[in-house]
Image (cartoon, rainbow, N blue to C red; front, side):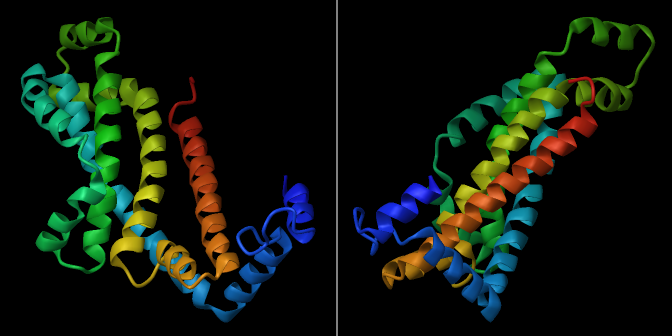
Length: 233
């Protein structure tokens, strides 16, 4: 595909102004990396993604396990989650900015809000799908809530829960790019948007390539973690 793209762009079968050759994009990537400017944008985005992701995943897993274990808590929170989930995270950005300001934490909260819902829903589904015989055995042996939480609910929900985490990391990347386009002066999304507005198309493609690369990298890392946490799958 890259060779075809290179040929079509070099021969102007496709407009090189809008689709510059991959070799030009690679040269631009190297040039931007050598200047140090690109690395700073990447560092800023990665910090936002990692902390925002954890800020969303940890409470989502905790609440999801509790909702799966206790029907009264599930019935209380489910309507609230179902009502809030359809609201696009970026539509909530003005409220987030009003509450948390325009600093780094507001961007992390934006990512956390987008990650929270797929993870909590998958975690609840994972607990609900645990064979009831395990719960019966735990009750017969006098397992306390902590044992049930750590030894049955958490490992039992892990396969489905990790799929939600995988989905969450993809959504986190989508969200940070959009958030940085709207309300930031740094980051990969900012690089994409500002170069698009300046019609610096190779630089814009550099940002797109970086997002694609990190999406693939994070997916591999989570799959590796999943194979360690769920060796029986």
